Length: 336
Ligand SMILES: Nc1ncnc2c1ncn2[C@@H]1O[C@H](COP(=O)(O)OP(=O)(O)OP(=O)(O)O)[C@@H](O)[C@H]1O
Ligand SMILES: [Mg+2]
Image 1: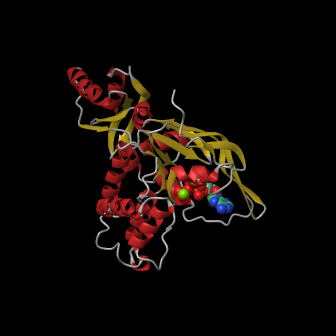
Image 2 (image 1 turned 45 degrees about the horizontal axis):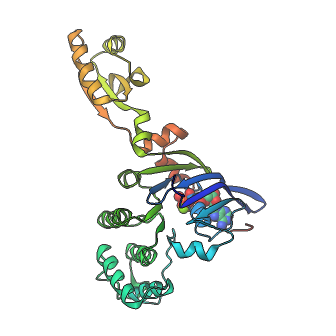
């Protein structure tokens, strides 16, 4: 077994706000191996940023321990910081400097030579399509341009472990795609990456492993494929009458289904809904069987589960809806 690059034990963060206690992170046990790309998912206020801020030494844990790149985050902050890059959820870039100068300063602050910093900056500027704007004062950049500059700042020193807190929020689709390419490229080159995102498709496309957090605790930790596979593909068979749908329920082969078949109404028409591990093949077979038994299937829909379906089944609510509940809730830290 390799030595994990991140290992937490009962990591906990509690805030006191106006005499009320907020359990932002509750007894988190997390292990990340070198080279992994892990996505943290969860609704607003789930504790994602707080976790990242503890792992990057910006916030002291209330209790529990965390080791990052082999060092304790409480006792060896400088060592931890030397091994990591961090792009926070807010904009970090100073406003009165030119973007390029910020980048060069950042590289030098990490002990890179001026030549190395310039070369690396050029690659990132190109990769994140900042060529036209990096020589302007940061305060004149748009939100998305500034966000991309922040991301290059976090990546300039090519850290072995990179934390990205909602890197793609606020980017247009094209720049999100550019950013994904950069992230996947860094990962391929061996960088360990922990990122948070509200874009489930993005997590699905990039991450090998998905950690779902809710109310400060991990409620799922697995590959996206496994998480979705456990739910099964949803197959909806349409019928002319409810009696046909009922009859079909008695005829179909329920072996391998992940939920008992149910008769319902979809789009105003009677339907039989089945969740099955191997839904596509099952659906084709079911249609053949039913037709052979004299039951006419009038509609067919096969839907693969998304990560949002996974979240819905784990928590009883959609990540999208949940994400909207307390958006923008920012509170001052009263006591750590
Ligand atoms: N400095 C702070 N002082 C008091 N409470 C805080 C502080 N930072 C975070 N919290 C609270 O801790 C909880 C977790 O917040 P956190 O920022 O970690 O959530 P998140 O999962 O990153 O959410 P989002 O998706 O909105 O970024 C929330 O209830 C939040 O209000
Ligand atoms: Mg956050």
